Length: 251
Image 1 (tube, rainbow, N blue to C red):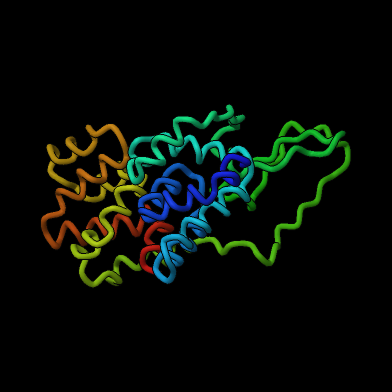
Image 2: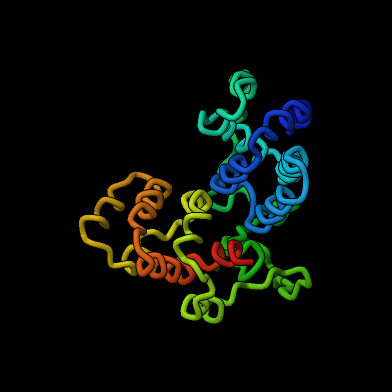
């Protein structure tokens, strides 16, 4: 965190060159939530690139030392630091600490419990708040957790909202996919089940599956969207299997 704070002005100057691509990278690396991404995306539409960079760095610093180190580690990637030759030179001089990893929820884990309390708190059902499972606890008394937080995020109504595909909420599917090409390439994860729904030619589907990363698979898949019918099937598949992502794009 100290490295980011001490070099904040320089980082703002470098990141503001292309804040849009930086947002894609921090979301792909799991450093920000969907709501935080939406907030930053909104800032990018209504304010300067410098404000986006400032807000992003503030969010990263608020998440603690581990996320700050992971953010700096991300900046070592040539695909990220190519936006600024100065950033590429500077990041190579930064000595990063080894961050303690604790599985997929590392960036959202709770602080160390007070002395005398030992338990593992796991967030299930894709949430950092809901449905906690407490394991390996040596607490002798019962534990009560209030799950009715007024600030709790409303869970996406998959049954209701995913029906939007059948009502053709996207009026021009080919144009929608073209307009959001970069975001879809970076963000779509359930490509295998989407491929099953599309029922592409076996050779085309095999070409998509042969790619090494989700981004490469999605980029290849979008290359086969050459008709209105296939575009509509892909949008319907995205509405079914990438509900949160589509909800963000259509909001």
